Amino acid sequence: MTDAVNLATLIDRLGRISHALQFSTGLNPAQWEALRYLARANRYSCSPSALARYLGCTKGTVSQTLISLETKGYVNRVRGEPDGRVGRLELTEHGRKVLEQDPLLLIEEAGLALPES
Image 1 (cartoon, one colour):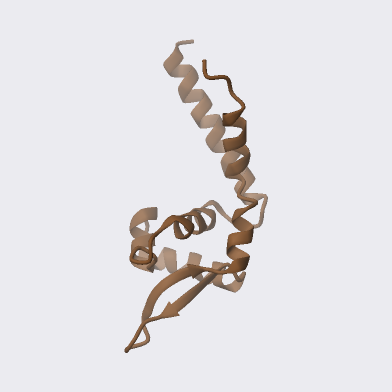
Image 2: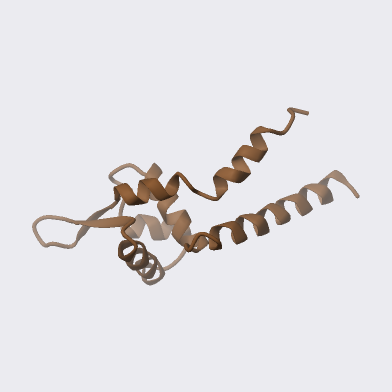
């Protein structure tokens, strides 16, 4: 096999492992990605519209993801003034805690253990 084929196979395998690990936690990959995004985003980018653009999906899909994350206590919607529409999204303390068990951290740790060569 060529290096390119080996690399493609490895990327595919890591994607499958990542996908399975994320589902094993009770959250789906889109929910995990939303939490990761909100943990990194600045206050101007913490909106449902910005999250939809980042995830490459519709506002309706993001809305369902956010409803689920709110129900689980991971995300709060902070209402804007003066009309009460959603101003921004923020992680709750519970949301920050769950990110400490992010399944992708296992893959990151494995990558750090690899030799430079």
